[in-house]
Length: 388
Image 1 (cartoon, rainbow, N blue to C red):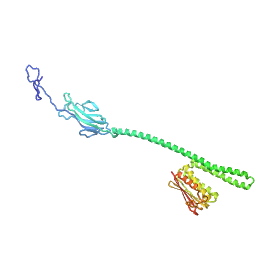
Image 2: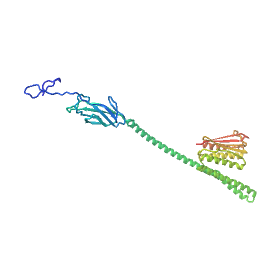
Image 3: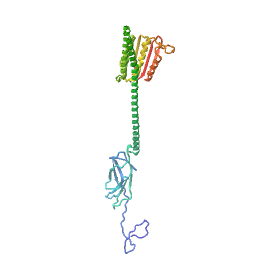
């Protein structure tokens, strides 16, 4: 054992010699620090340049490192060990100066390496290289959190949208049911007003005929009136059936029907009829309600022309500009002044209730009615409606 006071400046070797404190010979080996370092890095076979830390691009699968131990007079045994803090905590020993490993998990870790001396002792110094494994945007926590939030909000939005669609379908179904109920009510009202009145009139005419069996001249007149009433009932039935038939829900079918209707109304009266109808029309649907109201307005206008206008000719025009449908009924009859209120009702072309009903029907379907007339200059009736 060495004896004496030592202050880190001398190395004294002694043994159990008979001569106290006799000097002894000893061999002392002194060597420099031995520390490995990374000289090259490859991410999936592509070399990456680095200085103080190694950054791996997103999507890297394999990481290869080449090392060296910069020590002069290196011993032939180049054993060293390495590890990745936070991933491979256990030291991995190797005699090759290259390492191939799976890419570290996303985030930052540290590669550490330590060399062994020839006497089997590990050098006290440790090489450290920070390694940052980048990740794609969709792999980040913020993106995942945002994606989860978007998914939750989208699911909630889809739920709200689905609820709104169900509500919309329910409202549409209720609207269709209401429209169907209104149409049925209208049909019942038409049957009552038109057919009911006509059939009542026929019944009364039959009762009158029973009292005139002995008067052939009166019977002839009753038969003529009865025949006209029967034809009126037939026309009313045809009109109701036409209005409710789904196959007639087009502008083309309406145009053909209304043109024929105007001709049939005017033919027995001797009033000349001039029609101006488009040769071709686009395929535009027309609801039964629209067709029915337009038909009733035209019928009311024709009745007034036949009864009060004393006209010789009637011009009926139907035209379509874009989605605007225009129907015009012009006559060369007596005309009237629509402004004065002191004209007797019997002398007016349009009675107050008749004109009011016509305007009301056009308002119900979103259309307009315009009447231009003057005494001795005939009357022009214009209907306009925007088709959906």
